[in-house]
Length: 114
Image 1 (cartoon, rainbow, N blue to C red):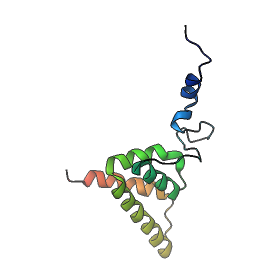
Image 2 (cartoon, one colour; image 1 turned 120 degrees about the horizontal axis):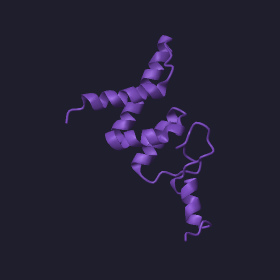
Image 3 (cartoon, one colour; image 1 turned 90 degrees about the vertical axis):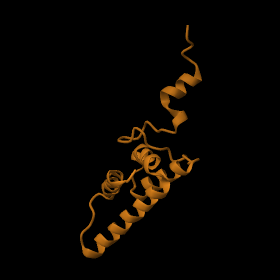
């Protein structure tokens, strides 16, 4: 018979071991404030999420960084920030910078020569 008071079961149910905060409304996979990235991929994903004030979608950014690599991810982030700046200068604001970044990632993957 399984001991239901086992702390490891509680941790799995609460997802504490993944640094996931279940109390955030729209961010089932959002990061806790105390999260410290330990790899270049996780650091890059956190920086991208911060740039767009969108840490609730950290898991998406992390997966995209794993696929395209941290250097390319930062390059696309830089391009997106430049597009935002140019849009402001021309009076054409970009409504959703995170969507623009995601489009750039998908466009890169479609046009990537393997």
